[in-house]
Length: 623
Image 1 (tube, one colour):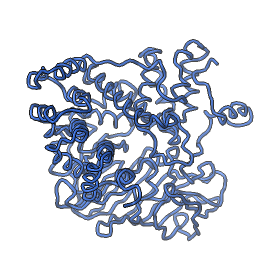
Image 2: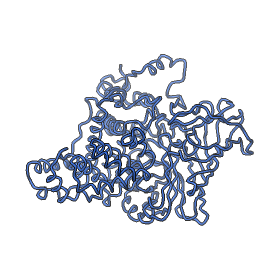
Image 3: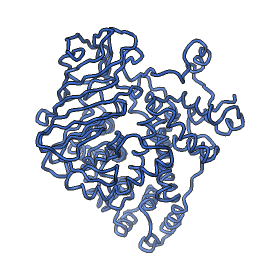
Image 4: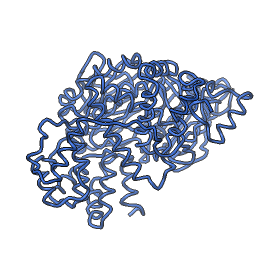
């Protein structure tokens, strides 16, 4: 077969045979999403006017979501997604004519289908609603859980299918809408969204936010708190609590350079501004690519700009993800694999090839760790995974991020960087503001790059990468001279050289992380003490390094660092760190007891995305 990908699933083979009687995949506007009750081929939302009040006393968002709709087939019903929302009333049109609504199917993670009665001429629907305690997208923080300790904070996390828990919507990544929002909050707080925002507080506590570019629902985002703004470039700036704002502005000073570098690689930035908000440490991810306003964890603020690659990652999403978006969550590698590749290209341009290669090697180490963890579930290792009937949050991050990166890097190495970059530039322009499926991407690669070159197709092994399990044998080999220097010193230490004599004076943080990651799994108390006293690992302000060290603390029962371990778990809610540390603790009875004790105090400060994951580790029976 001369194409890049051999379509192996029965569905896709059937589609090939039926191509003469239906639209080709490249002509389809909307795709069936197993994680949404919406039917956009019948009636679809196109614009949202949101008017809500944020009530910190009741811990509730209440108000009206008005949608402009396109009733494409003259349907008498439009279907939306909700989960845990209270729907009070629905009206039609600007004159707000009352209409009926019912709830349809329901499931634990999909929520309930909201069916609204409309007419063939309906162009607006107005939904009066309020959130409940079951709004998993929302985290309401008490003042004590913030940096300033004096005022409350609220933030949302809508990806992948949590937008429906704080606003009724057609919650599918393949459906886009523009939006305007009016947010009312306490006057001593500032409200910002994934949109055009105010930069200073006003006396009314009412803020209006505009998003003129169409975005999918998972990119709806809101943060409300004691927030200040600092510009870091002509199109970029940072929001943070007052006690952190200067540090954040310094840490992210390269943001404008990143934007310029990204544009040189793959075309113009199409979202106006690119700002960052540093959230409280309970934010469950490193960052979230909400357009115009990246949500970021404070754990990337190491004080030396060593972890700002995460900003390059979230910025890259402005092309891969926000601009060209996976049509369903089965296609999530199209968002994340592309973004990992793009991030490292930005890093290479700004910080040099060696820096980017260190990032890639660390990523490959993460992938190997994840493959080991899921060795008994090889069905999780293809890039494309059919997720019908499964929660999309169960996707293996290492696969869609790092295997996706390796696939694209393999493509670059075989096709040539110049030709590959031209292809990607055209790809982002051709499919801007459109949904992308794996099959559509494959068709485009075949058309633009492979054509009838059967030898190239065999060399690329695209079908193995996308639909196959594990890592194909044409995986790029990534090496780092900087890490080889670390390996020499590590070997010397293991051979008896004192830690204080190691040649590590000029190491970068990536080299230290590599050193700590590659320490033996089992070490003596003497060895742990020597390393800690010489290099101060238990006092590290670099969250990545602290996490790597704490895995050894647990594995080697190094009690002098238990205080750091507890402090880390109490004050950081980033799932990437929290989940594996609790998993390690739970391997022994003593560790399990420690984990449960810490978790009983830490759980209230975690976002639902984090605590629902840890619950499965420590409280599998709900105890």
